[in-house]
Image (cartoon, rainbow, N blue to C red; front, top):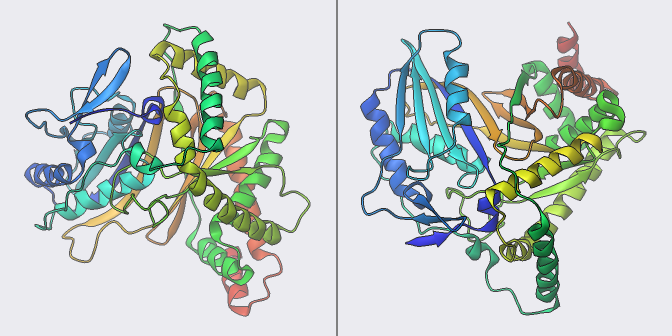
Amino acid sequence: MKRRLSTVEHLVDVNGTIVISIAGSISTEQLRVAIDKVQRKHPALRVLLSEERGELYYYVPDTAKSVPLRVIERTAEDDFVNVRDAELMTPFPHDQPQLRVAWLKSAQGGDLFVSSPHRVCDGMSMLTLGRELLKSLYSEDELVAYEPITIKDIIGDLPDDESLHKRKRAARIANAVLSLIPSSKRPLQNKEIFHEWTLSPELATALRRRCKVERAPINAVFLTALDLAFQTALGRNAPAWLDVPFDGRRGRLSVLKRDMLFFGGGSFKIKTGQSAGVDFWARARDIHQESNQKIAEELANTPGKYQFLEMLKIPSVGKMRTIARLQNLLSRYARRGMFSFSNLGNLILIDDKAPFQVTDFHCYVHSFSVRFMSIGTHSFQGRLRFIYLGDEKCLTRDEVDAVQHHFMALLEKHVAQDAAVPELAGILSAVAE
């Protein structure tokens, strides 16, 4: 099998790493068996890359190559950060599988680093790999393989109508513009800030209950608070839009099943600056309604968008550097462009049969091209966790701290405000004590 990568797969030059902390004994042999089992299931982990005339192709080698596994003995405090940075920021060689695993082991257990390029795995795909690796450490059940899923499967059979002709005209214009962009030989230098924080269990409980009372989903509440925090902390430099990824599996895109690897399921945008001066909870309910409408629109438009992207000529590496620098420049001197907010939900990584415990979870991203700003959230063992991930040239550490401060203050304020439910009021009293 030989397949040319889609335009989207060419353009997404990002690595993702999840880190799963484990308490318990795991051998290198167990890890090797588990990794091999997961690799046999997923077609994207068995292919290699080749480059022809500036374009990338997937191909299946005559002899399968194993996913690289690196085992490191933990001897110092900074080993975690050193391994994370090495796994996250090292490009994937074309002649190796597009997944690698590192095991930073200690006397009590260790940290499992699972890394893949975004062109193979989005956040939900990384979670799938993490769960399957963990289960394969103690279960002998074989994972069921499936046929490769490509962007053409998502596009399907679109009609030859006026929409198609509009996309063709737009693609011709875009390709003409791309042909004028000069090439850059100077490599991009990106370095992200990672800043994590956790809601107290009391505040998390109070927030969930208040959301239920107000009939406002927690994700919409986070978006409302984040919008207000931006305006207060950053003022005129606040991002103009919130980009919110959603999972295209969940029956939304029929060809994508829950346990398949794919580079993304879609996203929608919420304009910022709309939450000031209105009731907080009413705005959260409005955002929820707007989100549902935009998800439906995005799903309907996704095949056409992918079809349009496939009409574009793939820019060379040098042109991509120029495009990235131009986009970074526009974000720097205009309003700071786009800010991504993603929610992985409540993470359950193992079942009761596991002979070990999962004690912590982290998720990191590194971009080799366009700088980005994002906040990710998930719930793990009852704790609501947040992480800011963004290039150091987008927001300073002081600005990130200010956004966090105002975001948390807004949650505390609006959870406590007019708490008429007796049970909720009791929880909020405990938070204040």
